[in-house]
Length: 293
Image 1 (cartoon, rainbow, N blue to C red):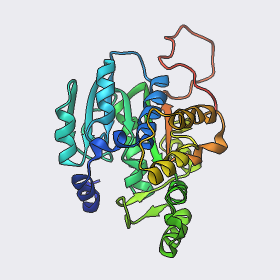
Image 2 (cartoon, rainbow, N blue to C red):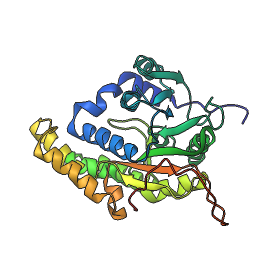
Image 3 (cartoon, helix red, strand yellow):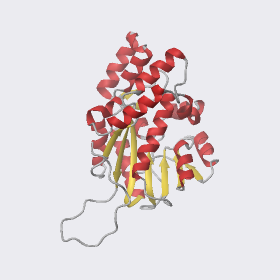
């Protein structure tokens, strides 16, 4: 390519105005997303020390706990505000950048996270560019984790908040369910919502084989959100929050429940498929086995 496509200005504006640093701490549903993402990543992360590239890492929400765990973390994000926030964290460096055109050299990271970029890229070609860039900069045998917003999460969200009774909301939901595209009409910015089948297919098309796909929050997040809205109570630390967390864990092995989560996570090793042949001594995998789904 001769030029890099720009990040859409409405996305930059949304995150400049919003408090992304507080989003995963302000409510029980946000905390559920954070806790489950951390839990799922820790199942697969290589031992420390290891180098992690957090692409679209925002203000460093995940970089903070990764650095505390002993990883060396570098954040790439297109929002200047986020880069400044992430760079201020202990053990974290940050730069302004685009998931589709990383500055890192090939094979220089043990782990590459794409926990934010995919759902802000409407075009499939751009999502594949982000995934292939992650595959380029991770070392052979390294780990890639890519998150998406579930195609069905707006429908489920509006059920929890009763916004679905508005005719204009219903029209928008029909379009999103059909096309995956969200124009940023209310409460969020321009986004693309994926099914777990679509996420798995795009990860595979980018040359990353056999991804494990999880529903992050599990099916219980809707109940937590509805109760928080109508009681104005943060359910963190309550039995309802604990029940939602337990439900997410129980749902892990069941593919039919993945899309009931608000967010979906694909985790895959960048190791190429082994060629058939005689067995030879090799270094054991750094990644523990994960439950099938």
